Image 1 (cartoon, rainbow, N blue to C red):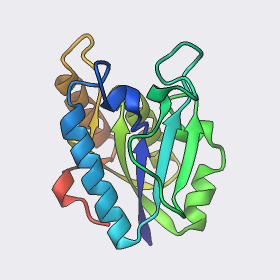
Image 2 (image 1 turned 60 degrees about the horizontal axis):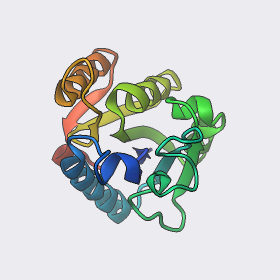
Image 3 (image 1 turned 180 degrees about the vertical axis):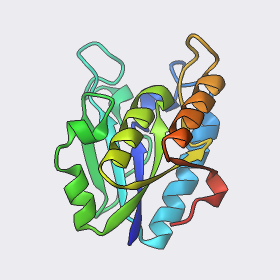
Image 4 (image 1 turned 90 degrees about the vertical axis):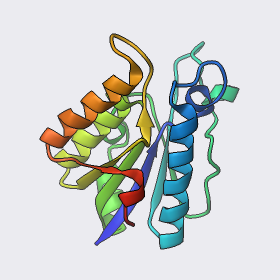
Length: 171
């Protein structure tokens, strides 16, 4: 079967400028590496773009809404208005299965929202899921961003998600 890369919300508002997540530089490099390796392997790549509400930094059509990485022909771009990519795109699981995908590498923004919710839905839909450490991030909140990201990894690992260093991801 096939491994696909699902890049969540790699948008300008979270990866560039004053409003970026604290780990933006590191995460952006990790995402670029994953994209390059997935493309070189001919693996499916799915970009997910969050549509923020009016006035939000990721409101459609604003500079912050734009994707950081260019998409290529054959790569899917999905939009969503909720944390869970599967809930926002009812046919996603069938689309992936139709391409022979049984394993998802999920990376991007934000660890404690979209990465967590989408990973759980992927598991429930029967996909194997891998999250590369260092290829997802969030903002400081009740704890520092790095602690929140690590807690999400521990939580999802207990639910069956493989957590591996970026360099160990295979496509």
